[in-house]
Amino acid sequence: DQQVKQNSPSLSVQEGRISILNCDYTNSMFDYFLWYKKYPAEGPTFLISISSIKDKNEDGRFTVFLNKSAKHLSLHIVPSQPGDSAVYFCAASAGTASKLTFGTGTRLQVTL
Amino acid sequence: GAVVSQHPSWVICKSGTSVKIECRSLDFQATTMFWYRQFPKQSLMLMATSNEGSKATYEQGVEKDKFLINHASLTLSTLTVTSAHPEDSSFYICSARTGTGPTGYTFGSGTRLTVV
Image (tube, rainbow over all chains, first blue to last red; front, side, top):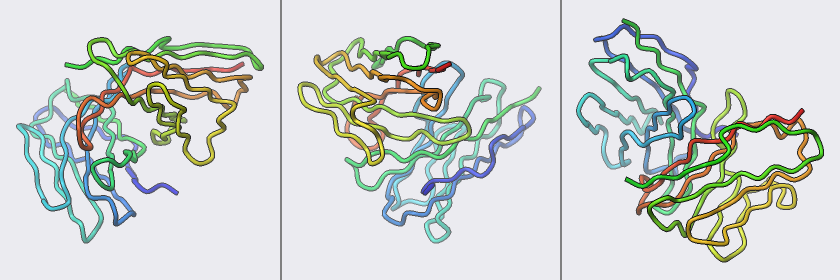
């Protein structure tokens, strides 16, 4: 039972344009959502997060939007840069001490 | 920042043999470590949680006798895949608790295991 889904396995975006990565979840108990970035041969690194009491969180070029009624969140990267090329994982937790449940990842390729 | 060093980064072994994967916290003490497994095109699935000095807690469906976890010190946790089979071929990654809340995790770089 995949509780966190990233339906797009890959995405290609031109440098300077906006990248939008999507994530859907099914468990209504999730109250905290995170995005991780992963380069080849490295572990995931934390990028940005959002609590369920908010609908938007912004950090520089990265913005995460949460639509609780649709059980959907998205990560916007603008402007996209070649160094953003990586695999992005969406993750969710139910409570601060809860384990993380990950999506399958979306491979972002930012082209010149 | 906190660094979790995971070794080896890749390993090939024969069916029936055992493989040990190590995760070390380099500049902090990790009382809790997590072990994940990722099959191709699937998500990172939590296998078990290890606490220093006590038995690991395994997720449902994970064989305790096959995936032996040892967390004997505050800086080292190991995962041993015993009697490995080709279906155990996967990407294994560890994570340590480095802070409070859902953002308080640091991941190792992962180990690609191929069983032939």
